[in-house]
Amino acid sequence: ALGKDNAEWVYHEGSKDWTWYDGEPTPSEMEEMIAKGAQLKNWYMDKCVEEVKTDRLNRDKQFDPKTDVVYDDIPEVVEDLKNFIMKEGPFDVLVGFSQGCIMANLLIGHLRKEAPGGRELYPERWKHARHGAEQMPWRISVFFSGMHVRDKRYSDLFETKSPHPTVHVFGKEDEYFSYGRDGFGNKPVE
Image (tube, rainbow, N blue to C red; front, side):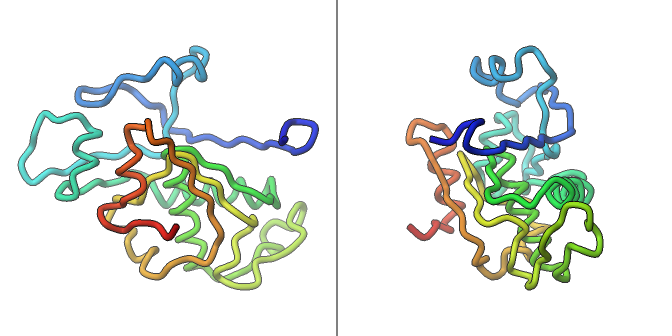
């Protein structure tokens, strides 16, 4: 079993303060328990752009393929996550939950578009370099309750399938189960 005696766990979280607004679901008891009274965080804030404005919950808008979803501050947030990984790594596994999985997908997409490298920018910790655009600075990604990227501005990052290995974990009781697995018809390879 993995634990603090068998693995080093390094955490990084989003920096955007999450604040409830009309149409947004309220935090679950589990989310509040995990937060222990601390400010809930997002990696990025998003907004839904509907053809005809409705009063639906944000979640219901997100599930609607006719709704455009726009993520704020992605270039800065991706750069922050990349810098964290490059300064604190190398890592064997990147683990993400929910919006963290979207961030990992965005990071993978951005890294695939960048020139390989590593050592020249991060010499103090980086023991090896990325030798190709498809090589990530970690070995495998494990996604819990992950979802697909909805912001169309980043669809070019996913025109071709990445060879980076991933494990996707979904719970059938999760309200996002079908949405996360289906991706509006882009079912994952099983």
